[in-house]
Amino acid sequence: MVKRRKGSVSQETFDDFLANQGMLGACEDHAIKEIIAEQLAAAMEEQGITKVAMAARMKTSRRQLDRLLDPAIPSVTLDTLRRAASAVGRTLRVELT
Image 1 (cartoon, rainbow, N blue to C red):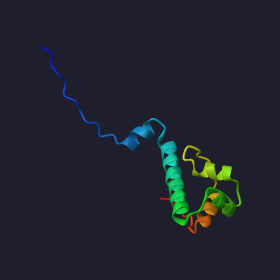
Image 2: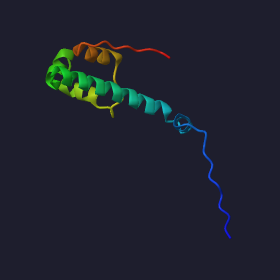
Image 3: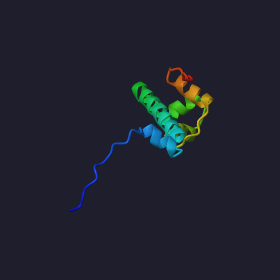
Image 4: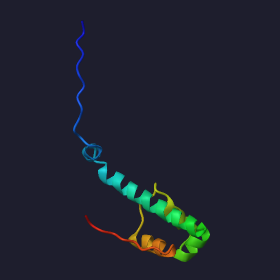
């Protein structure tokens, strides 16, 4: 007769797991970028702003705007985020917690 071992539940959180794998920072950065990109896209849609018009408001190219709205591209400057927020009538708030 084979004796079965009872499974145990880990007390480790998903954040703990990601930190142990050295991936927590990158995952958090990606999530923040994705949230901001979604908020900008939603504001553009609500206001009927096209990408061409948004790029013009930001004084940048459509290609740069596409990079900003793409959550897979992590590098975005605070200046770019501020200009994007301003272009849709919002403000950018950054805080340390």
